[in-house]
Image (cartoon, rainbow, N blue to C red; front, top):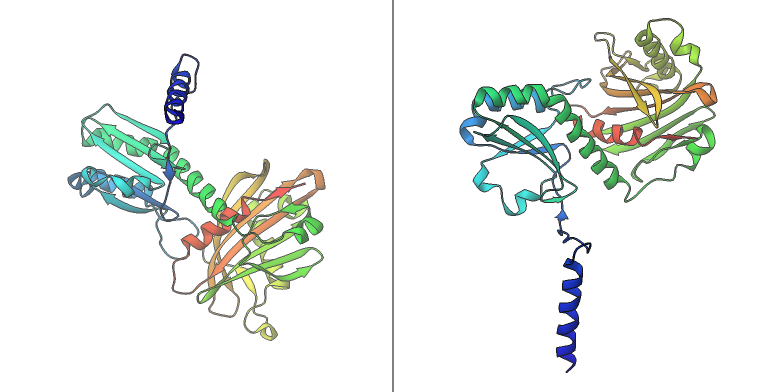
Length: 328
């Protein structure tokens, strides 16, 4: 009797959920997977090994700006369409290239897993496919970068270091992993460090007046002077008694962009640092945030020292930390 009642109740519930105005059936998606900054390419081998594949590599595996050696923006992993099934479909970022269909580039979210960003690139022939890839790559790259940034920040949130010291000194909230430690704490300067295999990852926080960056129209020159003055005072080299300290690499001008952090205007500078008087160098990323409420530029910067090793993923982690900044 109880079994009959249970079956009847379940049937009534199922009917009520599918009546007009009832709840729509919800798909249950698995968690996505994959390494940070890796994209799966679903494309026929013939296309991948020809001009279409070359266009994809030119746009999605372009060299990352500001690194001392060439490293691709994304790591690409190609599979033919017939093998894109099962576990492979759970990859967080994918591009499906489809020949013989209407010309378009379409972004789709959470198709096979969550979170997931997929892109469908289609065209009647190779020429159309190449045109779509070249014309839409900026938008598509931006979508993948945001997906990977959010995923990196989500992973870091599992174990965060206390940022009360930054709140107290700078009115700054910054989400960084507990693997980092406070290396130097001064009145207007904080240095945070994480040891990695054969090197270190560093984060600096300090503030400067508007005039230090806006003194004239040579913004990049002013930022270089600012960095070098901080390096001379706070970042000694291996022989400080001989005047070794961190400077902006003199041989190449850094890249300068305009962006926003926490809804505030910021200068983004990417380039290479070196130690004056020593054979040490690496990449850096600097955000100078214009904080008009507090009449200052709040500067948050990260740099990496890891000789003879790739640094793309290290710098991506630093960027994910810096972009988590909130200023009160």
